[in-house]
Image (cartoon, rainbow, N blue to C red):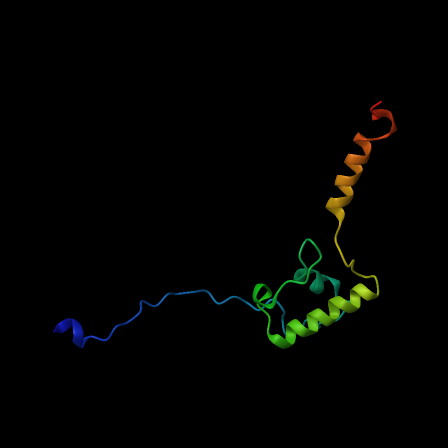
Length: 101
């Protein structure tokens, strides 16, 4: 009977509250490349709101700023650095001197 009298309590987990990625003084703008580059993956994709820990309004402003920076050629649409390295190494190996007869 004693078990049923006590209400069920979940053990409280202590967690450290994470600081927001955008401070109150940071301005979300297409010219602020140091801020914008934090929300883009290595492939050049815009990271999701869940990954960024942004509010809906902040995510919309970041997305608009990234798209404006891409249109103005401040950011690339795709980040193909790895592809260039691979194609250069392939073209060197299959150059004119290594042709099979």
